[in-house]
Length: 225
Length: 225
Image (tube, rainbow over all chains, first blue to last red):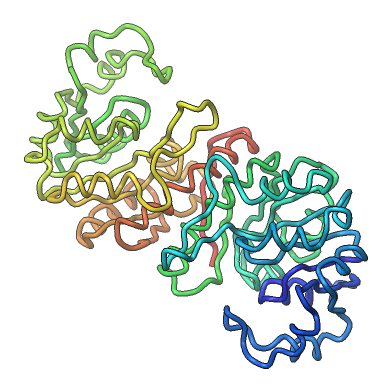
């Protein structure tokens, strides 16, 4: 597939590289490609400059959010949650219409210190906000419940655990589930419509505490039944 | 141990019976023991009248919240979350001081229909509210992430999964963890202080959606790592 990955942080990089490895044609979307490639210092999250990564991944193109989305059949939102609606707006509703948006972002609010809280929860979710803002897109929430390395390579764990999909469009969820299985995910649970994203986004608070308690982000939730 | 189980609903009944089976001396606390025993119809949650259950469990005594707590070394809050603070107030701060309160309740708000939302979340939790209201008690949040049958008999599942403890007092958490292991729980993760109850209480929304998606409440979270 022709896939646009919006966001050049660690999640975007890891997902994009894995997709390219699996044979997909991948474009990374960023606000200003020239500025992103010219940056020589780590970004706000501590990721090394993008240019070095891009040099090692020359099969992955770099474009504006709009150009990346326009050329893609499938769009992945790998931006941080607070920026997601604005970034998707830059990608352009016309470039998202009819396409699957795999939404990986979480509505984390760092303004009150650590651990972050959620800026939307319980009676709404970021997944729903995106679906409402882009009603012609087919939003599927998934992969927001584990760290980037395990999203892309779950078999790093002896038991990879479970991932979830939430969305209103069954075909879109099937497309995402197929991609998840290509990544190595064996247990994909369809939770239901996009409102069920409230459930998986609200997993983040316990995920964050587990990271603290276990001393590593290399774990996943598994639903035993 | 001498244990008081506050609440005569399905969670209280299942936990009390399991504790008695394990050799503990159990008192069920209820608002008005005579009224509870005189009831001949199902309660608001559809549980059959308590008297029949009490007749089959004559080794378990029934007392007021205050009398049950006063006579116990260890207190379990198995009331519904919306009633918990008021019930613990009836049990009496003086009867809870110095004792472990194992808080199983979730802050579910059914006032907006199904699925319920949480009446406290993210920046506070029911576990913390209880600890603040009864500062001399030693509150441990646990078992609120799975259904009552599996709380008491996790080995019903081929893989029982994980349970969590949150609390400010290490000795209290160790006491609870010992009880959990007696129930059959093999993987108990100490998340940290009582604020980490925010994480496990916020698991409820995805638990409720999983119940819907799987068609059964007979499942648990396991942390694979």
